[in-house]
Image (cartoon, rainbow, N blue to C red; front, side):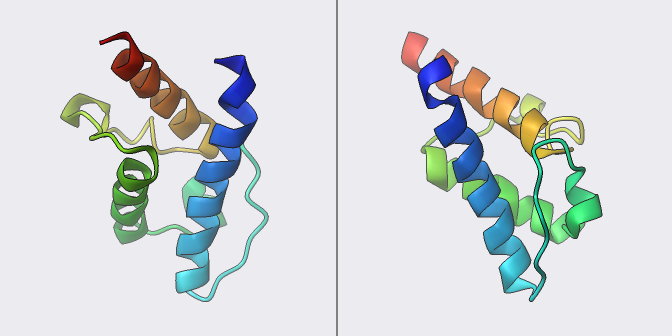
Length: 90
């Protein structure tokens, strides 16, 4: 799992930056920066959730759609990595 973590993080950052670009915003998206602080609105969070599902080809379980999981790239990365691990274990 360690091998794909940088790729996982980069894919999530790319999704966040894509949403910011749609809003004509540009920000330095560090892994620990709060997503609301870089400019994402609540509607953007919905788009991010859908983008993550499409990018990684899984449905985020309702129990995982929490403010805590969508706080930063790091928290989102942890949740995605967990879901991917569960999917490959099933």
